Amino acid sequence: MKKNSFKILAINPGSTSTKIGLFQDDNCLFKTTITHTQEELAPFKEIKAQKDFRLNTLLRVLKENNVDIKEIDAFSGRGGGLVSCPSGTYKINDKLYEHASTMFTVKHPAALGATLAYELGEKHQKPAFCVNPPDVDEFKIEARITGIKDLYRESRIHALNQKEIANRYAKKVSKNYSDLNLIICHLGGGISIAAHNHGKMIDSNDIANGDGPMTPNRSGFIPAKPLIKMCFSGKYTEKELSALVSKNGGLLAWLGTDDVKEIKTSIDNGNKRAKIIYDAMIYQIAKQIGAMYVALKCNCSAIILTGGLANDNYLVKKLKKYVSKLAKIVIMTGEFELEALASGALRVLTNQEVPKIYTGIEVFKELEE
Image (cartoon, rainbow, N blue to C red; front, side, top):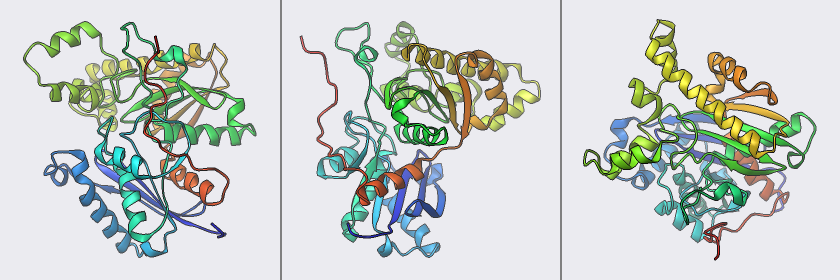
């Protein structure tokens, strides 16, 4: 495309919000978080049924902020529900749209990002992109194997923010991402802690399938036999158990809330139970960092803490006591997913990056005999 400047709309749906940002090249012109109440989402039995509601809400907010959608040059959406795929920026094709809209592998609102971007692009005859979806898989083979034959670990990571943080840190220290070994900890409602080995995320906990530390609302790793007993106890449905793993576990299950500020206030007021549970989560985060340190063969340039929980001084201070001797600790608070969505699209639009083609063929399926 022979153009010097581009307006890009980035779309990042979450469980109860849709974050949008309008960018002129690398400059953010407008950014907001649209909150969706439980009452608004309750009528939709499936996440994919929320698409039109979220689209109409998005369009209303753009109009209220005097954003002319006809002036937008490209749309870039989060993504998900795909089979495992290489990292990079994808121009959304029919196969990617099909898998995202049906949530082919994992049901999560993030998949709506690619769906919304594609439909807006089609309507306005503009390109639509998906950047480093959660399905990015760069695991080394040893990280996939479990103790049950033909049952493999999968790569489900906050790939978008993980990659953006890695590149920002590399730029900060005047290095190439491909020259560094990093442990990046995305600490939010979901927690992913990944080992970045010379530009590849070679291992991490699986944020979708119950792996790694517990989080404000996810269970994390669970001992297998007690979970099997729960499955066959007759007390729970499959849907209820799945919800315990993915959205009703962790701090929420123990303390009745996943609001960390509320939990911290409770701890400050002397709630010993809340302190024990919160400290347990921090301990589990530290153990996962240790595991990724081993994955990097004890050669790590930095341990980077990002995401909303990286703002918590109590968590950071306690975490440093566990892992500060492994590598220097770098705090990069917040998340840069909207910026990453826009910059990925911009690289393609300016011919700095060749867009990836989503084939629907898994990066890794199973070991051949």
